[in-house]
Structure formats: structure tokens, C-alpha cells
Amino acid sequence: MNKIDQLASYLLDGDEERAIQLVEKEMNQTSRQEMMNDLLTPAMQHIGNLWENNKITVADEHLATAICDFILSRLDIHLAPVERNEKTVLLMGVQDEEHYIGLKMVSSIFKQYGWRVRYLGPNMPESHAIKAIERWQPDVIAISAALVHRIMAIQSLVLKLKEDCPDIEVVIGGRITQQIDLHTLLPSSVTIMDSLPSLENWVKEGGPSGKKIS
Image 1 (cartoon, helix red, strand yellow):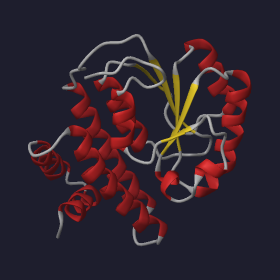
Image 2 (cartoon, rainbow, N blue to C red; image 1 turned 60 degrees about the vertical axis):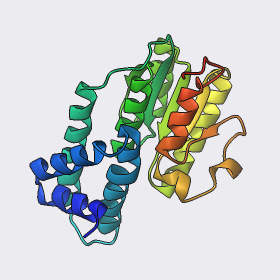
Image 3 (cartoon, rainbow, N blue to C red; image 1 turned 180 degrees about the horizontal axis):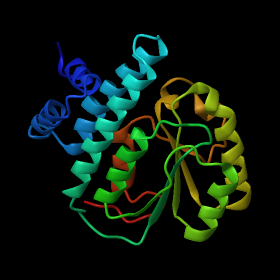
Image 4 (spheres, helix red, strand yellow; image 1 turned 135 degrees about the vertical axis):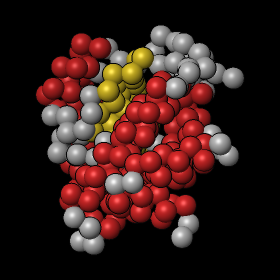
């Protein structure tokens, strides 16, 4: 059994201790971002595929998600930003989108590079998202979605943001970016991130017209 299937098995079995041990072992051999991209993400995607094909229950999927959430929170405790800056990112999932593990991984990357993170979580109604943006005035709005049928919610929110907040950078990520070509469905000014390494490189370069982090 490869390490991705092994981690998925531990998560589905509720074996928190072994899951943490496997993640920590991987981090001794690679970077935090590579571990999230190459181990945690595909393990959770595998679990998602099992659920979509009715091979596990909703309870199984929720248990795996809860343990993955705990692992990410545990890793964040020891996170030391490489540099502080004055930029703010607002993170959210579109309305009715309940998946949030990817958002937490994205949050970790921004935190590592010293951004102020305002994490709104999944299933954010459009009207409440707009109010949060008015309050926090972020430099970047990062939106996540996993399922293709969330595209209507993404389009609606993005068009509203581009109308009301044209100067704020909008970044779209999540599993949906690997399922359909969002470049043909969204304004050209929207940044599409199809992986955590792509996001990390963008953040390291300073994000929207920012100072490069060496």
C-alpha cells in the first residue's frame, strides 16, 4: 500500500495517532507545502472519490475530515512566518460548498509568508461575503470550491466582486480547477490556482503587485 492509500486508511479508521506519525515522517523528508500537496490532498481526494461512488458513508468522510482538520491545526501551532507584511487575505468557500480542508491548507501558506488571514470557512452566503469584504478591505479574496456544480455560485460571486471591488485580487482554487477550465467561464482578471505549489510561488513573489520574498 502506498503512503497516500495508507494515510487515507488511517483517516477512515479514525486512527489519529498513526495518521499524525505518517504526516510527521513525510515532513522530515520534504517541505510542509509539498507534504500537503503530495500526501494530504490526494489522500482526501481519494476519500472524496470513495464517498462519491458510495463506497463509504457520510459519517466515514466526516471522521476523516475531522482528523485531517486536527492535523492541519496541529501543524499551524508550530508555524513560524518567514516575514511579516501588511497584506490581508480573506478565505472562503462559496455558498453550499461544505469542503474546507483545502481552504485550511491555503490559509497555512499565507500565514507562513506573513499575511494577515481572515478565514471565513466554507458555505459563505454571497451577501455575507460582501459585508466581510467591506469590513476587512483585503488585498486578496481567495475562493474555494470542490464540485463542478458550484460553478454558478462562483460566477455569481466573482461578478459581484468585480463590480463592487474591482481593485481587489480574486483567486480561485480547489478541486474544481482540475475538473473544468475556469479561464473560459470567469473574467480574465481572476487568478486560477490549480495546486498548492502554484499558490506558494505566487505568494512568494509577493501576490498582487507585492514585494518578492526571497
